[in-house]
Amino acid sequence: MKNMDTTRKLAWAAGVLYLVTFAASIPTLALKAPLVDHADFVLGHGNATPVLWGGLLDFVCAIAGIGTAVALYPITRRLSRTSAIGFVASRTLEAAILVVGAISLLSVVTLRNGVVGGDTASLLTTSRSLVAMHDWAFLFGPGFMPAINAVFLATVVYRFRLVPRFIPLMGLIGAPLLVLSSLATLFGDHGQTSSSAVLFALPIAAWEFSLGVYLVAKGVRTPTADDAPTRTPALAA
Image (tube, rainbow, N blue to C red; front, top):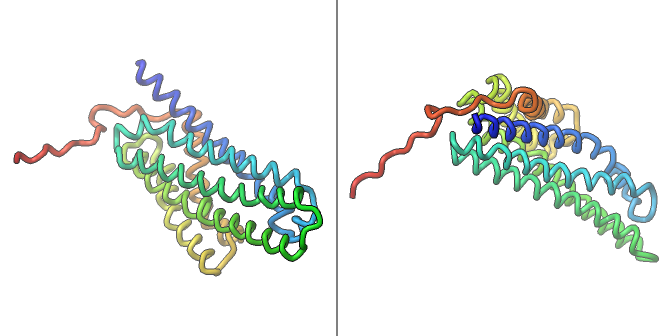
């Protein structure tokens, strides 16, 4: 009973953190728009406060993302150590990329506030370089990484029926779609926030949001001894 209570608490924590990632990520594009969409931001045009909030929310999203993997690790490691470690690693890499993107934009705010009488052309060039770094981080972080996360986590969740199978199935279907969409963005076929890109990203978004809601409301099926991974006996020398 004690183990069941612990599992329920871990699942609840993971679900809450999944929902935090959604709450933190939804407004960030709009908050960062005064900088990302306007090259003259570094020269003092527009309001810097929304950009600061956008950077902070990216950081919150990154920490919450790592938290989801850490909270689920004690549950998933009993079923697949490789997938459990892989999910923690992929979430951590995603968070690192996201923070790099946030820091690049906050560096533009520093240029705007700290450089007085600087050369306009140099400021604009530096600002564009930092925004370009953010854009690439946005592609490889929120673009590619959720697909990798899904491969590690949804496989275990689906195989061992930790939640209803239609939930991880959305992640397993959405992972290749998101990779294809991100590759299309990488090679200039469409923008990452275009309508087609959003459409391709919907299954992954639905998987993560549905998982978060279910973990908060119901938790996970408690793994049994039969679920433990089998070990192959070592061959005698």
